[in-house]
Image (cartoon, rainbow, N blue to C red):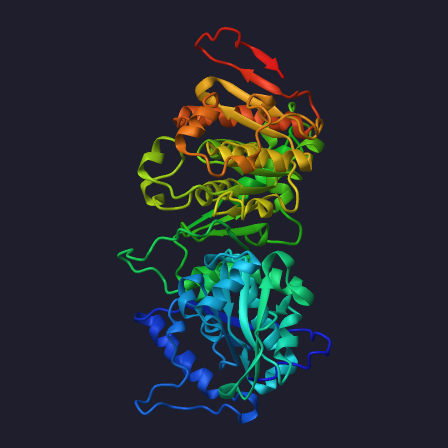
Length: 567
């Protein structure tokens, strides 16, 4: 393999490479692109001629691999339309059965490795080795491609990236600079590569090592790169729906023009003049319209602010810059919450467990500007029976409920920082969900283990918890931030522990949790619960009065439960 750079050399200032990306398919335009990729892999010299280009007797390339199908392929050029100078492949979990690392280790050893590291196969991507022209090495193309593949894996939801590195020319040390580490006991000599090969593992949670900033930047640019290289949708609209993406792509006016040229934009919404007029009214409520809306100095309106592209709908929307956008968006709260309070709320990070009821809270928070960062825990796909509870349409069927919530929130505010734990809360994911801290937790799950385990973590970390049970007219508040010894669920279930709940039968769960409302909530209940949670959250996060307790508001009389009753 090529020596991308001397492992001890300082990181060069990398130029802006032009990179195209596509997901390999067995037919159509992508198949033709795959043939070009394979020719590129065969042409670029590797290891100073130790692995020369080879052609099979049937004319195919020796680099033909089934692993290409279903993998992301990145091709780098110095400028659009220029000759290809480098390439890297990122294999997705869908192709995990064909990973080269799995073949290198064998199925049993590979699965043991993932289990020992705490990863499920669906959470692991595999990156190939960057292949670059010799003259581009000192310009940092290998660094750029490697960082892009890792960043793309981060964006696509990976928890780990695995790969095989050569050791003769320092490939393993090169990958260590991106946060990879060698897996003990995996190094061995491979005759085909004429060197020792070692398996390297990268934990997404640990960041991108020495090149963390570049990995992070390219992670955020990946959706734009992928969109620009995608095959435009056919007029018949027969393409498969996007069920994975929830982050909008934020770009400049120039990037927006490139997106428009790609054919992947279905609608353009540019109301920046109206937004500027609203901004002027927000800043100067009196006499705002005498001279028209305030224009940004030194910039044309088209270049002012941000263009947000939503891949799942194909909409491209022009919005004000973050601070101006939020100033206008929360203008309706003037007189109820002052500007410093609004800024404090946008600085908060909120965890939400349990759609659909949790969705009502999350969407209300997004609407009212409560929280600027969110962690959402998934709970399965959006089904036909959910249409009476969640804000979604028939075109959303099959999308994870948490992903659907994140999309709706991003369509309200493209600047929100939203993470989705699609696996939901499990013994394997709960620590990751709470990692990095939360300012508030909304718990709306009907799984006993999750209800108790989430509260155990919240109490240990001093995170307040709010829960709404609209079917019983109940808002539940637990101020673990003030009361670190407070019993879970106000002690209603005694000294219950989450570890004791993992093996309960359905009958035992009913007996133990019969006093908790687990009935499905209709849309009205979801909306009502969201409103209650938002009011409690606002009070807690702004330091206003909100005590622990169970608060009841119900049109149906309930002896001894009417009104509010702090615990």
